[in-house]
Length: 360
Image (cartoon, rainbow, N blue to C red; front, side, top):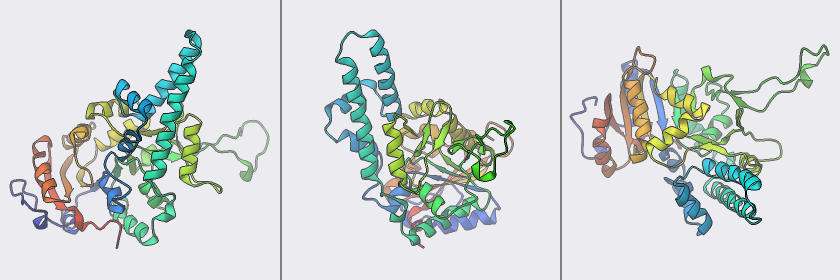
């Protein structure tokens, strides 16, 4: 199973997911998990697909939105919307054209609503659309890593991982967010515990304890300019409703949806949360199990991080020794086999159909 030279041509002869786990357990190897969009597709292939968000917006037929994508040469929604906001402020000062600012605002509003429509269309409305059986099954899959001192990395922007961890109250799934005390305890006035004021969930306070990493961001995470915050449910609104509200207030989710590997890496390194996640992937030890990630042409930055880890990471010491890539088809096996030379550690394959993430 560990010899790279002996590669079957059909996934039916590949090791099962359970066999990979058994082997790593025998080797006493620490293991980590990397999830791609196949994780969401395995839940429901009808509403999740590769590049679904970009494709949804591109096929809306809105000429203005399409031209923005082409002219700015990016599909980074956060960057486009922020550029439009900045341009609007500049135009208010420098332009004599009374129609320019309204046109910029119109473009921003169209893009914003296209993003909101895509989110609402491409996601289940709320957490309880995931059945109890599906939620428990997925949590058992994740606990194979979280409960054994492993990390879970995801490149998905959707809410499924967040929902499963929240619904199962996974205490060992720290994502680095916490609340800061905002009450002034030095004012000389006693404040009872029930009256203490805390911030919204902010990233950073618990980053040293993180076990769950969203490499490309995710819809509930927002960059306010000072803090990276996480949107929550409240007693009146589902999570998606609160995400929508923040977008309407000109705050934009942190997620990297498109572009080349280099473009994605630039975006990642300019955000403190994303950069920390990427550095954490670059320093993993032991073995990495990959599910639902295709290692496409725009994923070179992920391969680079894996190779840094294979050389001992940025901190040196022990290193990432092997990667186990889940494969869903014979065609996929042939394509992924051709990528072996790009990795600096052993690459093995397993039959991803045997993982059964969403059902016991």
